[in-house]
Length: 321
Image 1: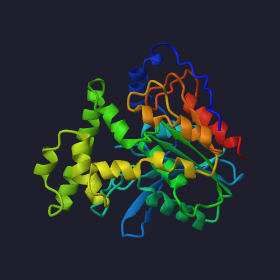
Image 2: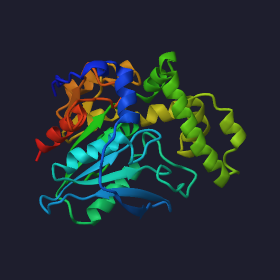
Image 3: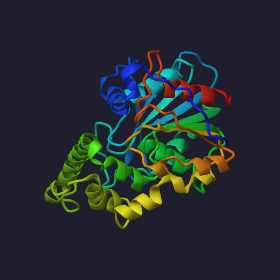
Image 4: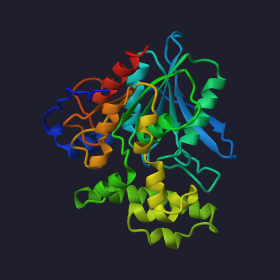
């Protein structure tokens, strides 16, 4: 598909990528009714916590499934903003917490990673078992966007009810994205991710002391160290390099066969050059790539009720109905 030309022009200070990234992630307030939580069992004896918000009207039978980012969960402002945008337009919402990202530590040593599309597939199987939805859309943020694009492009059976998808700030080249995050300008961001992930691993070490030690966790000095120590080995990869190579969505984009929009800001300091798949989009019948000049990382701030990427997502998906 042709590259999509965006028309996003943020107010004032939000032309700065850091300002938009930080404000959208930490200071934005979104009022929502409470989620209704459902816990489903996975095929390997673990569980996933799904948070639902249903529309006010009975028809049509449309559902959007939302996937959060690294060290995220369903109560993050970016998740709640997208929930509100779709719910206000009469969509049911299923916001997925990845393993270990809700209040309870998951049962198994494994948790989640950028390529854990099997868990999304199990959520989809559960949704179909409800026999409630005629049309299903998917929206993924950051790491969840990579997982979503990989799921859509894999050689697997996918339900015909999926009408389209949107990925926001997608690090579709994981190694390149890690290199970008590790730059000095992103030190505060990378350190925050590192500390958050270490805390999750300390909790895991309490439960699985024979698999991982607090000493080894403390010795990790970077996100790559964490991926070498835990993320790769816990999920069947030899090391971080193999994990990044095998799980990067860029390898699966040519397999996408439903209309899909990827919105990656040009000033997103978390993304490398290879995270802007211009050639893949030009060669694809289904992949639309939009690269606004501004927006930072999931920070498309506006003065309106919905942020730019939220209104774009709703408009794109509803154009497919």
